[in-house]
Image (tube, rainbow, N blue to C red; front, side, top):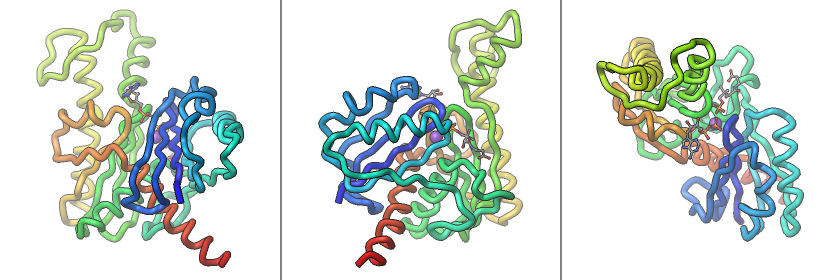
Length: 264
Ligand SMILES: Nc1ncnc2c1ncn2[C@@H]1O[C@H](COP(=O)(O)OP(=O)(O)O)[C@@H](O)[C@H]1O
Ligand SMILES: CC(C)(COP(=O)(O)O)[C@@H](O)C(=O)NCCC(=O)O
Ligand SMILES: [K+]
């Protein structure tokens, strides 16, 4: 019973085909396309893919982009499946959502938290957790040991920070530099500034959680630019590239499992 998970961000669509809608299922194929190239999915990326039996999507892009994704799925002649979409709710998969308006929380953030909490549970760890997603934007979430989402922050990603500085100044059009403790040129100053802004925000959230929960949290990082940030963090982090897909597998196992048992 194959399962296709789709994560639509502001920069790229990421997808992964699994052998089953269950945590631990085998990943059979995966890929990513830039949002502006979405229309090549059906003809190119998915052309030779075995037809999935279930599709679960998670999107933070516009309705127009979401419609384009649905159209690509509809174009797949041998696929007979409509995607379901994750919506952030007040409760799912053992987590509770402390957002003022739970449905306004980005679905990707909710799914990543579900993936992180279940990852810790699978390792027998019952501790608070800070979840960092480094994509177009950067999000840093706080989860307590019971799975309650306490709250989180949103900050610009590397690209947005750099573009904002480039457009708002006359003298900051320079190539990418290196991360170093004491930058002595403009390129390194900008690259290090963006990196330290993110690393510093994570450190602050780890401090907040430590104070509030009375123990140091685990820290899990993901997102397209996670690998770039990981070496520059000031707190220990585990990089888990598949975190969103891990969360989708947890949700799918619960939802699809439930709908089967009610249908039968
Ligand atoms: N091969 C790549 N192409 C483009 N961006 C990449 C690539 N690898 C990492 N990145 C970085 O990842 C970010 C996009 O990450 P991603 O998780 O796909 O974002 P989103 O979920 O917001 O679409 C980009 O801003 C870029 O900095
Ligand atoms: C914060 C985000 C822009 C992150 O998007 P991404 O970087 O993954 O493309 C997205 O999760 C979003 O639009 N959230 C809705 C607002 C909120 O979570 O409060
Ligand atoms: K994302």
